[in-house]
Amino acid sequence: MSFNVVTQTLLEGFLTTFLIFAVTLVLAIPFGLIISFGSMSRFRPLRWLTKTFVWAIRGTPLMLQIIIVFYGPGLIWGWTAFPRLEAVLIAFVINYAAYFSEIFRSGIESVPRGQYEAGQVLGMTKSQIFFKVILLQVIKRIVPPMSNEIITLVKDTSLARVIAVREIIMQAEDYIRSAAIIWPLFYSGAFYLLFCGILTLLFGYLERRLSYFKV
Image 1 (cartoon, rainbow, N blue to C red):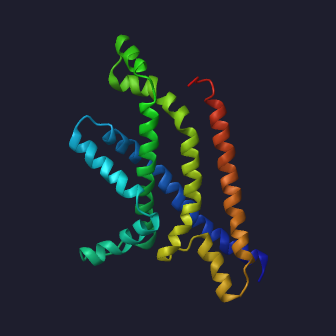
Image 2 (image 1 turned 180 degrees about the vertical axis):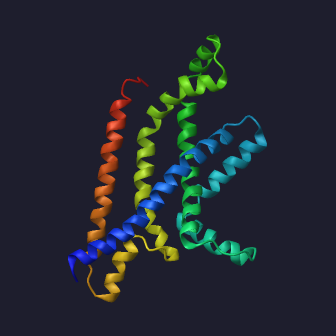
């Protein structure tokens, strides 16, 4: 089997992998921030509902959630099933938003109350205090745990194959059945290593840029 042919096939699979990664990141981060506000709400029913949702999502496997999102609408309610890739994206966004929300919540709650009180003394509104005083401190605190979750997301994209979305691992695995060769499977690992290596460097750079915050 030609190395160039295998590379082309794996690149096609990696584009799907990257799409899952990028869409999940873009949607799950703001969604997670909204969920974190619900978890910290003073309105008890909302706080209880949000925490129950986060507990359920974090307490069940992502693979199970993908299967439920794909098969659930048709088998439970008789609706038309989501396309495979859309089902994967929905499951990933919901799952990672729940994880991100806990990171945001812990980051926000770790900022001393004195920071809020100082902003109030200066006559700032709650939104001004959050975005101009609190947010950058929160970002500094959450970069390490967020970087871990984002790198985990890269590897979790391989779970898309459970409903036959042709990401890079599934593309590589096809060669085991069709050509009885296994090296493309190891080759696919190089894509993950390179991608995760780039992300590690980027997060290291971000941590250094934010090092002027003494927390």
